[in-house]
Length: 124
Image (cartoon, rainbow, N blue to C red; front, top):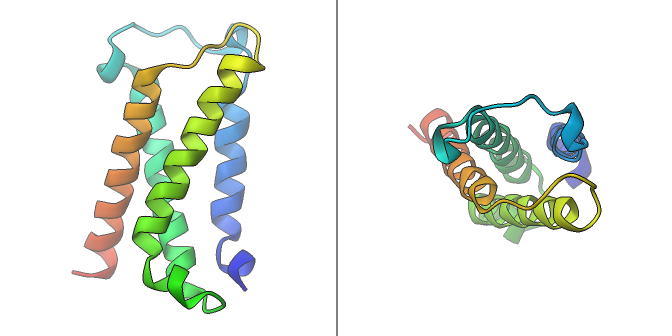
């Protein structure tokens, strides 16, 4: 049942994985303003959607009651670990790509935004 309720989460995670692991030559060139760059907003947006979808999926499933009860915290941690793994893969396996601290910061900000949106929609 957990897969059934997290299908959109899995599909979105696959989209994130594919787009973030593209070789650097296929990436558009953007300004180097770190947190205010298009890249940072893209990371934050993708991880906001990922965290939101994961919270919704985990809170609807009933196979794992503890996971359902701690859906927000679990989704936040899983999303952050996913982002860190992507950065490690970029650093070690993808030629022309490097791990960037600002990407991790943007991912974290996106996860917080996803949590806020979830609480705004489902709790208020």
